[in-house]
Length: 347
Length: 201
Image 1 (cartoon, rainbow over the protein chains, first blue to last red):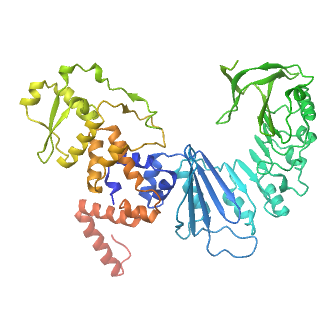
Image 2 (cartoon, each protein chain N blue to C red):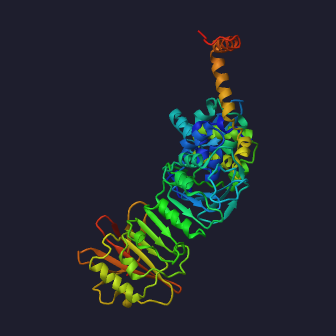
Image 3 (tube, chains in turn purple, cyan):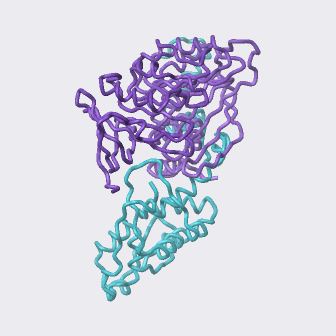
């Protein structure tokens, strides 16, 4: 035993800064004084995600650790939809991001009456996170939560990530309650016919990710791409040929998708050659590494690329990565607000 | 920030003329005397400034009384100077204000700090008072490590942390100790309440 609070305040703050997220969270729950010290130590979380399935989990990340808070209730009513009530315990696991090893702790028994609004407020204040969640993620669930409850507590979110919950009607309700958002990730199976409705595709997302959790469904077509209004598009389940992608590039040159900044797709099978993709386009091979910054933390390294211009004079570069049988194609558009910096020359 | 990658203030041993290397004498508050090399003293910003300000020669060091360190006992000071001698000449980490901080405890330091918590507590106070950055880093890390895998209830016991109620009670007691009249007023108020009075004045 060591009387922590009898040390000088600067030393207490130093000790807190050397703790990991779990230890800091534990300390913050002990008393108002401890919570205040934790706040003064200014340990920040970079990312806060809430996962909704049969129970609720918070994922909190900083540069070195990822902490999962899996809340549970001992006496959930067995009927649907279930109400979002104060959790009775939380099981915490942490991952060291540099050396991914999971550490699972014994469950913490929680104070009665500390509900999810309190928890959200608590983690945001002690980890200096803004009061907006980065992502709310819906997963498969046997007894879904009342969406009104979820929306009321977790409605302030920048991002929405939806996987098939097991019920198409519930999937639709989620989209109705939460869209529009800045960042949207959705799986093909969320929709009854595995294709994204046009009224969603045309929304102005900062980021649209399709099929991240299950890339085996290839349901997105070229026509779907052409109606999209998102700035960053990442599609894992795409059913277009290299020839169609070539057509897509030509349509972009003519002015399609004027808001597009970064576009990433996967051709899952067979090697696709550059020539097929760039055929008929006046391009120049660029062999130096460039850094492409969309603002905030969003930075991409473009190792090389095939540069070409739209008819409005906007420059773009297409780049191909091969990863086993998969071919990743990326298109970067060099809008005026995008910062592109050249790095060391490769050739 | 990794300590290894931290910006450092280089301690240039080679630049110190050989004839200037000397051993200073320090005395703890329980009259134990220690002789510490000039290079080891550089690990402590407080002591380094002190000896620089004193401008002692080798003769002064021998002839004048040992420099008194009034608020640290001999047992603690011994650990402090053992640490400084072992790490003499090493770069002193500079805090760039980044959080979270990453500190590794070297084997020597771990052995040195294989002590009871009472002595560790004194060592941290001493490292802070003497401004020995890296000793403070490793000793604080040792205290932070005590929290590993602990629930809030366990943390409360490990760090002897009072609850809100205990904090309130301690605050009240401190206020009363400062102002004895406050207790009398409170007792008078309680008595009037018991008698059914609804106004204190």
